[in-house]
Amino acid sequence: MPVSESSIPKNFKAGFVSIVGKPNVGKSTLLNLILKEKISIISPKPQTTRQQVKGIYTDAEKQIVFLDTPGYVKSRYELHEKMRKYLVNSINDSDFIIFITDAHKFPTEYDEEVIKLIQKLKVPKIAILNKIDLVDQEKCQEQTALLSTMNFEEVIPLSLIQQVDVDNLLEIFSRFLPYNPPFYSPDDVSDLPLRFFVQEIIREKIFLSYRDELPYASTVVVENYNDFPNKVEIAANIWLERDSQKPILIGKNGENIRKLRQASEKEIHTIVGKRVKLELWVKIKPNWRKKKNSLKEFGYI
Ligand SMILES: Nc1nc2c(ncn2[C@@H]2O[C@H](COP(=O)(O)OP(=O)(O)OP(=O)(O)O)[C@@H](O)[C@H]2O)c(=O)[nH]1
Ligand SMILES: [Mg+2]
Image (cartoon, rainbow, N blue to C red; front, side):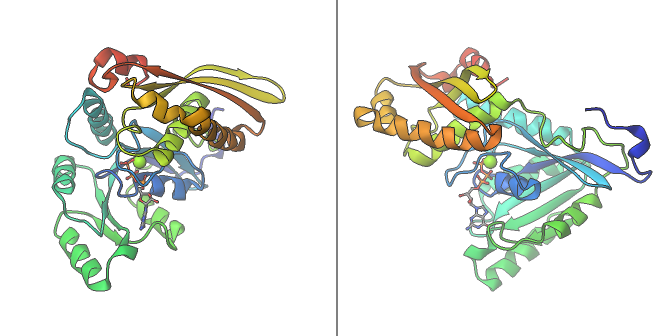
């Protein structure tokens, strides 16, 4: 829907912001909290987010386009190279940067790498010291002080899973926004297709339900999405790396994959508002994380 020019206030602000940091610090949690919707999947495991996930916040005075990025990791696979590229592309397109870290662990080698990467950019940077629920007050003060020496415009200690004053956060963010008309319609919360969200929901359930290497060795591709007046029929492939992973994913008498399907259907239903019939197929592509062609085929472009 195009934005009607006449309805835009003269001092409207709009811009792009990247949410960056090492894996598992709460980047996707922040995005979902601000948008009051589950835009980006969350799990207790690191490296949950693999692509750039765009979430759009709009009110009467501003539009903030948040780019949730994959956590910064050392490259062991071609997939990690792609994840890093999504991160670098996002920060290069941003008007300001939100760096998040985990108060429980800061500073780690990865925090330092991310800080090094963003310090090269001329745009303003804000630091969020998250998970302060896991540390005592003294540690929190110590780390806030340390971050304050690192060239951030603001340092905000908080806990995203406890009470957060979202309006206050938005007010802080808006100080760093340029004057612009909105880039997206006020009704849009993302520009990603429904298929992407379906894939991510299934992937999240895999991250939440399986242990060890399996979540990391899996990716999901929706092959068919048929929208009927009273139901949606979806067929998706779950790609794994090794034959030995297949029986684990499926489980005894298909029990695991049934649970995975049911949990995914339930959540997809909350988005589409219709009955959901999901078919899941398990396939093997040896070493897909290491192969450029496979990554492209699976949508990591
Ligand atoms: N204790 C505590 N846990 C938190 C807090 N914020 C987020 N978490 C948890 O930390 C885990 C990781 O959160 P995510 O939002 O997925 O982290 P991420 O930075 O997006 O991680 P990647 O996508 O892997 O890079 C989840 O289990 C969250 O519930 C917090 O303030 N305190
Ligand atoms: Mg994430």
